[in-house]
Image (cartoon, rainbow, N blue to C red):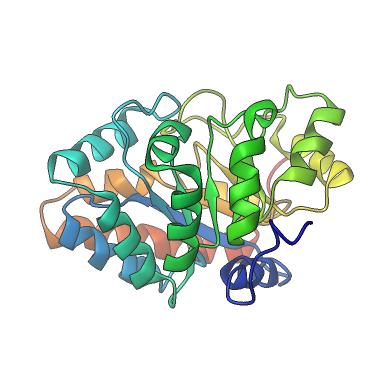
Length: 277
């Protein structure tokens, strides 16, 4: 790494802390919620409460065209945007949470590019984010962002496909940081189907190709799925199921339902109940 892209002494601290968290022997729970959902005030309160259950908070950057998200997250993002979401709110949210959990910002490349790659990387790093998950970022087109992310001391988490060739997965692992994001099911987020039958072999395959931890998300909705994932992955990532819980009852009862689900998922993940082959 050149001096130009080497993070300063204060930068990279959150990323290093996330790396250290993954060195523990237990799998981690990552909880996703769009910034500003269901309202700006309620979002911050819920995320702070989720920090007592989740090791990692994935804070969504709401976007009007989230092609890789299913209807649950699409509707939540639209609600956050309608409620007046701004990037200033996103940064304030990250800053508020950074001392309570490891924070990853999950978004799409287009709004990040519009904001400015260097400006986005520096702003997110200064707010205390450990990294950014960009599910639509192609490794072949990632050089400009990776330069700015490394300069700022941010991890870039790539979503990896089981259909990718080994050499491509090695390349993604070498360029990325924090973890690799492996889909638990096929298709967009929000699936309630069973975990993909090839998930465990895919995670084992990733372990032979890169030293990065592997988090499993997209379709993780039930405690028994978290328990299964805890057998072979480093983290279980849950988003749509938490949003469904928030929507299941008005006001504080929905938030209570989401927190109860997070508690069940955490305990199931730590139990590591053996899954049937």
